[in-house]
Amino acid sequence: MKIAIAGAGIGGLATAILLRQRGAEVTVFDQFIAPEPVGSGLVIQPVGQAVLGACGLLDRVVANGNRLTRMLGHEADNGRRVLDVWYDRQKGDNFGLALHRNALFSALWDGAVTEGTTMHLNAKVTGADGGCLELEGGEKAEGFDLIIDALGARSPLTPIRSTQLPYGALWANVPWADGTDLPMDQLRQTYRKASNMVGVLPIGTPPDATGPMAAIFWSLPSDGYAAWRAAGLDAWKEQASRLWPAFAAFADQITDPHQLTMARYAHGTLRVPYGRGVLHIGDSAHRASPQLGQGANMALLDAYALAQALGAHGPEAALPVYAKARRWHVRVYQAMSWAFTPQYQSDSRWLPVLRDRLLLPVSMIPPVPRILSHLVCGTLLPAFSKGDPLR
Image (cartoon, rainbow, N blue to C red):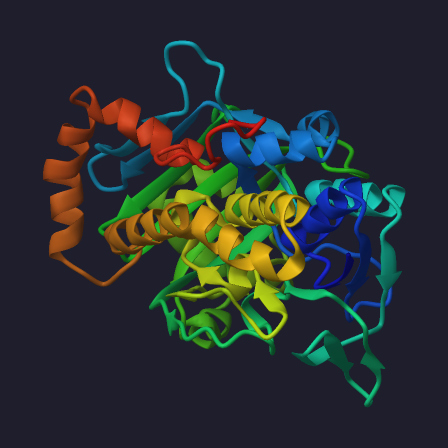
């Protein structure tokens, strides 16, 4: 098979590795001139780690990342727990792998190159049809059996219709603060109602870093960036530190607003993620908030399911097989994201009360803690079919 992959992100590069392992001829197209990651910290859940293992990259990525055992959040005004989820409190076998996007990107890029993937860079994809990729400037790349759209949320190839969520977040990477008493095996967050959220994610030691790092984030309305800039850094630092004093040691490392990147989120899913020789994966096929930490996970699972389908079927027959394999897992996690996100990022007055007074107490009653562990691990529904070697 001759395969074109539009987009050298997490899903695109993982797909390239897995398809090259199965003997396909793979060319990756991306608009950057030299490989570079974009983004901040992320978490790879256990099922995503299994896919990295299939790519032969898990040990390398784990070495540059940080193991998470727990996600813990408190209400700012009274200190009450409002989020408390363990990955595997009893056995400790499962963990979330928190890391800088650069650590994951570098491993995937090197893996794809090592497997013999052809890289066509400085090539901005503008369209696709009938085995042909259209590139900016009028250039065309033709003769592919299948085109995989891994261009993400801004892909010009996907027909997806998505709804922008009312809240996004400011993200930055900073060195782990000296003297902080925050544990390095936990994602910590603090909230005031649902309209304010601040968090610290320990992401290990990325390539070229001299010590452990943290990804910090601050919830912000999607249209609130200009007002935040106008208010100034000092006003933000004071507000964030009053909300959560432990955050001050991390916020003080921000000296320029350009260190913080605004991320906006959308929600939507393609009912049929393929058409006319083009298949969509990752954010090109399904989008949600990062509240459950499943974005990179979903892209890796898409890559693996597609490689398995193409390995067992021809390019045309593989597309519905792939769609069926991913359908319910994607739908359930999209629904969960839709349900959970407004409890932590919204202007609602009653949802935080429901979260604090009802959902948190219920989440402590067996077997709910175990269900929540499966939710964050990505195993609430089986991600792999019966007989799959990763199951």
